[in-house]
Image (cartoon, rainbow, N blue to C red; front, side, top):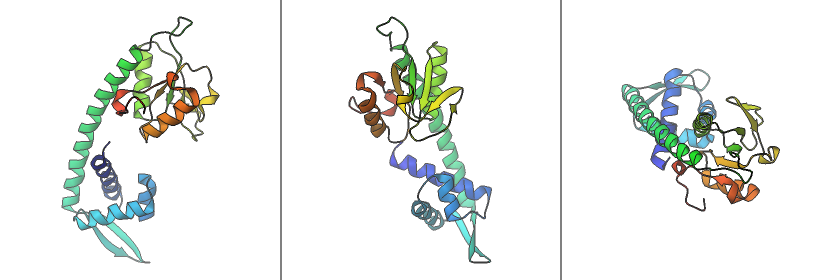
Length: 205
């Protein structure tokens, strides 16, 4: 996702949240979008300047936010763009993962490798579906710091060391994948990490 796509995605989230309820606060927008308060405020002010959002003062120094007709139109446009990009991403991700998984080969013991997915994401969901179709075993999905016990039908762990039986880790994080790759490779070794080309990383992450 490039800078413009990230900006569009955040703008869409803000417009959707305001469209759903006018009594949002800047803090609740930041929490909903998963960004810092200052960044949420900056994007909200930008939406107001562009005429996408109207602000009115409510009692007790509170504010109500409303989508303008221009805001509704922009929300519709961004939604259509997002869905189109999502479908394109799913197609590319499915093909990328199919190529990666089909090319894994076998272990020194002559069996299919046991897999781990590194990163809870839409990419992990696609990988799980592809692996199942190919009869490959996914031992666990790792998300550092996350204490969830399950992801889809799979075991979830917070450290790769919890599942030493994994032969190959597939990078499926979509948040700073380069950094995630380097952290994972330093822990388990580059030879045990595979990266779908849809993530756009070079040979060295």
